[in-house]
Image 1 (tube, rainbow, N blue to C red):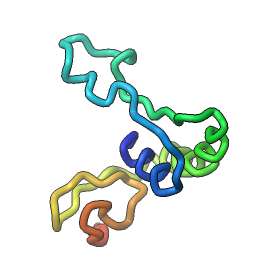
Image 2: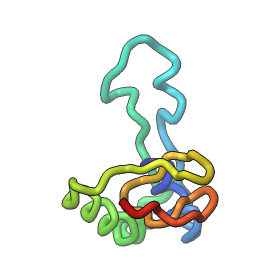
Image 3: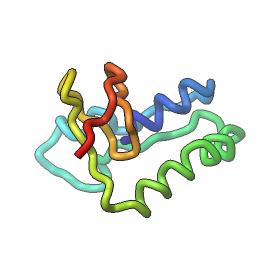
Length: 95
């Protein structure tokens, strides 16, 4: 999900990076200190980033019956909020 949110910011021209993007594989220790975190480069872009990402994040959190799905065309994992595969643009299968 962090990578998806970063791609949204990238598309809007808001510079960002993922802190701890590769940290999970560096140690046997696991915990919040090693979780990936999306960071906006400039404090001045924070409000714009939250305006873009906040509604999507709240919608996903408030709709627990939606589940992530796997594209039947390219077999990529797709976040629950998508009706179209982010990788190949195939439509979500009807269940």
